[in-house]
Image 1: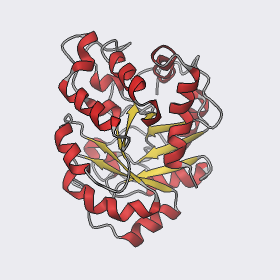
Image 2: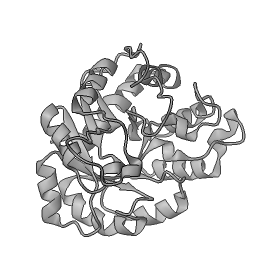
Image 3: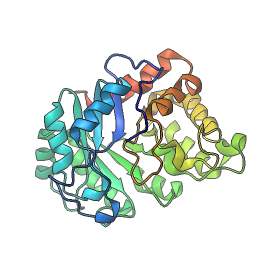
Length: 282
């Protein structure tokens, strides 16, 4: 757990939605990929995290350790209630329309493509997008090895559903704090976001930082995204920060938005309005 958990200074707007955290309950739901497992952080700990940070609702993202076994994530949604939680699931490339409808009935609203695991690849995106689009789902995309934005752009070209890119794309740091927004991969990401078909999660800042807390080399990227398309941004705590030690302070991470996104109306858009369209429109 985060040392000395406390509440943030930022007060989330009513109806706020946390968009990227995981539930780990290996006693009830054994891991599929043990090497990606975490210490137990069950649905009750997840609920307590939401309450402490001030989030009313959440989109629970299937942990990579569970592969295509979505039981842990869907169980957490059921226990929290579908008025408070929705799921982002992982499937194989051959998942059927009927299978997606069954997942939808259990609270799933998005499909996770976590590259580097043996479940889905960029080549799977277009055929799967056609199956999930009628349900109003979207795809969330992440590559822990680092992005190839040009390949991503090709993979998602013309698909009939939105795409959400995790953790600011996990783009490597630039040569200096103020130069980070000029990184070629980040500029390519901006071009994708500008189309309106792609969302970006303000989450996992440490993945893109060379300086560490308070991530001065990430701030220019966040500000550039906010200036370009604040209506295409989401926030995620990335709790419980898989495989990361020491664990970051979740409240302080959220409080960065007070500085990086100083306009309260824009923060409401990021913390409530944008994710509500994706996860709680029904």
